[in-house]
Image 1 (cartoon, rainbow, N blue to C red):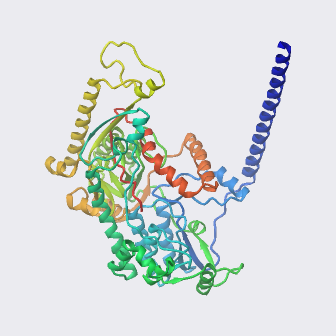
Image 2 (tube, one colour; image 1 turned 120 degrees about the vertical axis):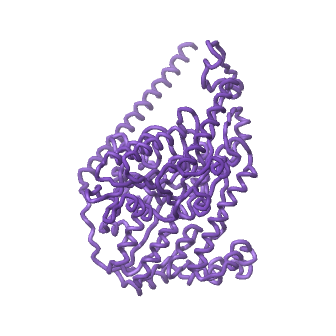
Image 3 (cartoon, helix red, strand yellow; image 1 turned 180 degrees about the vertical axis):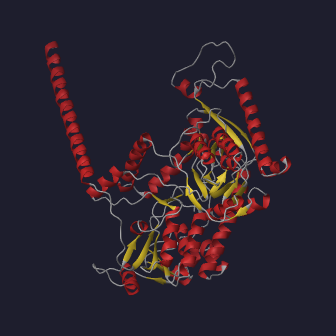
Length: 620
């Protein structure tokens, strides 16, 4: 019997070795094939020649993916693989300034007969960005050329931009989604309790709601009241803009959003007909009808469709803004600070304290840079990293050069910590800013481990010897020291704002405690100086520097080999997500679930203190 069992075991061992060998051989062959494919693709790749637009046509203004202030580098290997495999993944980001440059050039370009908005793949975008693009389209229309919007279905943010068009068309099976603005979050208190995770929350500010998702199961009354205030201000702006552009009454739009069921009942549930009768759109056209209409406007191309110019091709012929090196005759430097504020060096899309600090130092040392504009689009983050950037701003100001802040969609919490000492602060009317308050959040897992029969015990020379050992409870002296440090940080924040904005401490205290404001309200309160665009901020910086003839250029960190490798894998993964058969609604739900957890996981402040707001969770 023993020999039989030994024989059976040997058989299974032999089968296991065969399967392991086959697996290794298959993987190695696949890897070699992949390497050959990549090297052959790269060897056959040649830099793309300048595109020449040889025919007149409609400029297809494709706003694909997220609209960003600074774009991540394109992954060349992923692009080549997609081309070879015939995968049409499309861009995951579109540069905001590229859109404006294309529209501005098209205004005077005789080859562009009209603009056709393509908004079907529009991702995350700020309301201020949509407003500015809308203004650019309005300027384009002064040339006598049309702006046309035509979609199968209009999401709310897409329709808002489409309202600036001369003509809006909708598929007869389509709809226009106008539902209002909301700020909704997932709350994890009970889940953390079930997992027996102790989250120790320290915060200053009645309205500082960044940690509510892990402290509560619902939004607090204070958070609801302040969120409703700025949401109402933004929604009023949207209503005003749409009714003005479409020449509608506010009452008709209110009926459409508040009484959609009864409105639909009157047209037997036909969503497209309702949009037409409400005058949200100018006509209903099938894709073929739209194609024929565009042929009438632009002529017919070689394949029988309308003549068109793709945005990516057109951008290769367009002079780009702010890309030239600073000139000796007078130059305004522009630094983009976009994303969560974290300590150390960080890639594009995240504000690194060291990264942005070094760029500001570079601007101070560059004799060709006469003034600096810091473009902030951030809900905040690490207090330490924010202070590192502020310290560099103070050192920069010793050079005597002006520094102007231009706020994007948001510049709150740590974003405002950075901004307060500027010579002038510009924001858009719908920028979200303020949120003056800080917090600390430390999880401990002693209860979770005890459920598994795992315990932590030992001795130390002081009551703080265990430090932040997350496997045991926080000691009372440590809790007290964190709270004292937190109050000191909040007092420091109040002092920075009071000094930077020439306000009394009492005035700042009344508008602090984590309150969030739209840009127009922030200006009335003294947190913002002027309302306007990045271009307005650049002009302001030039005026402060005494320049009448000047240029403006980005100041950016050169990519390291490490950055390029990280972006390579990041780009490949993003492309795979785009091409994979994963429902967009599932990705959106997963993103919402992970957003607050992801924010907390990447926090790296050395003292554990954060000036951060979750106001970017706006459902537009």
